[in-house]
Amino acid sequence: MNGMNIHDVLKHLPHRYPFLLIDRVISCEPGKTLVALKNVTINEPFFAGHFPRHPVMPGVLIVEALAQASALLSFKTMQAQMDEESVYYFVGIDKARFKKPVTPGDALILEVALQRHMRGIWKFWGEARVDGTLVSEAELMCTVRSLKDING
Image (cartoon, rainbow, N blue to C red; front, side, top):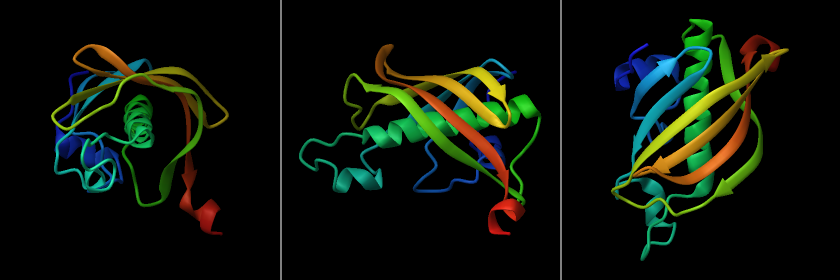
């Protein structure tokens, strides 16, 4: 499958500014891998408070960007779009490592690979790179839940 522009991304993810961390999908092979792009700009709201004299993207937001890429891969694998009846939760993270700071002007390339899908839990390996250099990696677990089940 070819990539997805921002309009396609918005159809698949519930996140909106300032929490949408995917600008576009470069490539996707449903059931296998997805590569996405996050352009990191000085206008990001977190830079005002996260080391203002030396702005660095918080590692937790890099992991969230990987989780959002994982959600996109899940939806493309299920051949489904987000709906008003369900929510996609990030339920676990293991082996997270942060190798190098991400700063304004960086193009953050997010690659996620589906490891397995069992009993409603999706497990992925994710890597984030800038200029080909690994800046972060993590194992991610996510699930889709019905809002009816959550809210009673």
